[in-house]
Image (cartoon, rainbow, N blue to C red; front, side, top):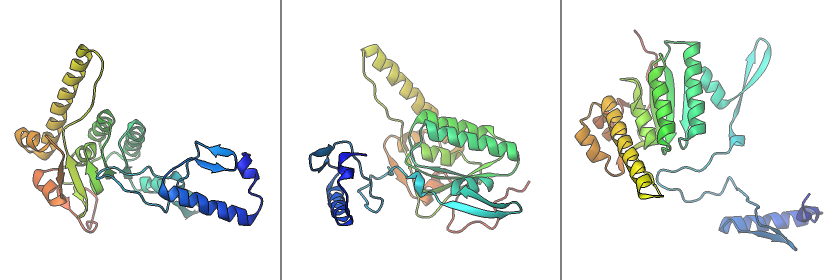
Length: 263
């Protein structure tokens, strides 16, 4: 137990100090001092305090806020976290920045659902600001690899690699909710070191730019010249504009009458 914790011996002092902590946290994350003890590395996160958010970035989520669903079965009660319960319905939630850890989870879920049923559609809900190109391409390749058709749904936003995965859904099964937004652009990165090293990295990012543009062209049926022009800088699209460009097929306000694919 830390020294400052041992000094909180009364309820009145505890309330007073918690109010002080809250006041400091509302202003900024600062070093807290109780008596002679400095908590230089103490970080307090108040879930009810909102901060300014960038246009296409989201705050890190808190795992302890994931709801638990309890089901009654013949053997008694069974508890699932909400995402595991949705996975039983063949629904995958791709939420947040795309990185290697998230990519591994999505790939594993796609492969699992294929092993469960090789024909029934998989529904992927996307709300992502984008992220790593290689992590996104791992998800993309798996979406194309698995046998079940993958329906994609944009909720909130699908930016950068998120928009590529949105466009990579099965034809006729790419959807967006009416107030979502989609953003496309060319890949970005940085390099340092010797001139030869920088040249190698520059050539690689140009290859990635061509590769990603061709993937967009394959799924949107839009000419590469138009895509190169649109992706030269950040291009934000409404669902209707994304539909015109071929990134999605439909804009939905309510669930369709049937989400099954009939052969």
